[in-house]
Image (cartoon, rainbow over all chains, first blue to last red; front, side, top):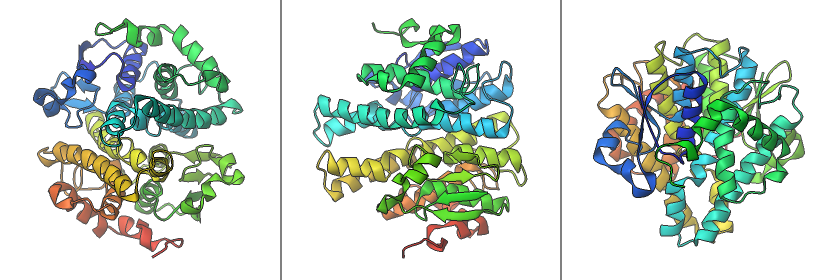
Length: 214
Length: 214
């Protein structure tokens, strides 16, 4: 299998963590998003959405959308699990993952920021304020959801990582870049620290990727 | 179980279709999003994200995020299925569902449109152009993904509905409200027509809900 990503992409970061956690070896390739390499015809043929990541299977089939890829990896490689066994717990984990991956990240990604600047004439500063606003809105809900729930453990759901943490940790990196005050989200901060202690998360972080620009 | 929704919410619409398709009877309740009823303290206690839908189980547990609810319904009520059996097919369906539910809908929902008007001083017209842009971007990718794929059938994946169609059909309603030229997406149009012929989709549409404003 080959994962096509980008060091700073939150969505690719999620998949890198899952691959590491499940010890699945893949070839890594990169498309430089700021240079627009995801819009090159050979990539659009693989993923008409022009977004990373894409996972190219040995059969040649191409999987896209990070959460769909995570579900696939969980189905073909169930151990160690990244979802709990009970349906209600699974729903809780997936909902937490979606708070970040549907309701935060797509609103503040590169292409949306570009629209704000190019079409609405917004400054870099107000595009940053926009990103902060949606990250804060999402983190406030995430924090409220996990802070007093008995099912929250060392990680967002229990004491081992789940899809929720795979979405949360990359978003915290993003939040830090946008200068979000993380002290407002003590449970998220605690879980993020636990994540980054874990070798699967650590090795997946942007600065450790071969295409990283430091 | 009780589903808390809103007639015009695409996310609630997805869940209504699944409940109808699987013949699961639930009580229905509504929060009027334009009046801000989703921000009332009693609802925020159920769902700190202040979004619909929320599915309240008989145990009192609350499930949020439409795709997490769909996965839950599929797990506890597998027949008739809304996901194919093979992992690659499941990944394809989930990716299609996410093109709409992660990369289109959250960028053009009510709260985002409100930010454009209130914080960026955009006109109603330019907020509409924004919505159209993200719907068109998503539909272009969706159409390119399904148009020439042998796995596309009467519906987005095969000849029976899947999660992909449950996300697509409500988004087409949305697209029509924003005056998107649907002739550009012939395969989507064909599938949408097939969806709306199906009683599970028809009964779930906004105009047939008790809280509908015509």
